Amino acid sequence: MSDAIFNLDASVRTDLGKGASRRLRHEGKVPAILYGGSDDPVSLTLDHNKVIQAQDFEAFYSHVLTINIDGKNVEALVKDMQRHPFKPKIMHIDFQRVIAGEKLHTNVPLHFINEDKAPGIKNDGGYADHAMQELEVTCLPKNLPEYIEVDMAAVEMGQTLHISDITLPKGVESVELSKGEEHDQAVVTIKASKAAPSDDAAEDGGDNAGEEATEE
Image 1 (cartoon, rainbow, N blue to C red):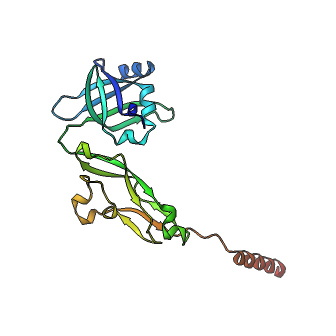
Image 2 (cartoon, rainbow, N blue to C red):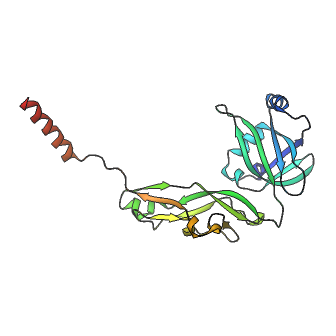
Image 3 (cartoon, helix red, strand yellow):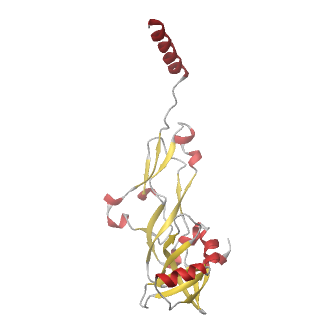
């Protein structure tokens, strides 16, 4: 994967307000804000096409990005992204500064692996019902994973994997689990598929219908 998606060029903007943001979007720019740490928030402008290309990659949302702000590099995470309701257009981005040595809180995507090998699916015809697609974690910037794997190779029919069943990378902690065992939320459950009516049942239904019609 190219490092280009983790590096963005930005400029400080001083012309603020809805009207100014609207003009920027018409010029192919994306208004943004950078906040966090001990520095003041900074309003930014980024190239829309570059952002569109970068945001196509899942890792863009969980990776520490380098933002070149008028020649000065700042590390940050995407904390929020506002999109146009129906156009393929980014309306605004919130970035949070990443400070080396300080733990950060963010959401990391979950990748469910070996679903096809799970006994509850392979042998019993069930399906995986995902209660989560991402996990909120806390860790140092250097330990931030792009994704976390959930191995389903041994999951049986009716079995539920919880957060505590996930093997987290070294230095990464679940925010929910840190609140106590009662926050050990369900991640995925293998459930039975809804069975289609059997041929016998269909035939019985047809016979009964014919009998009723004959009686009438």
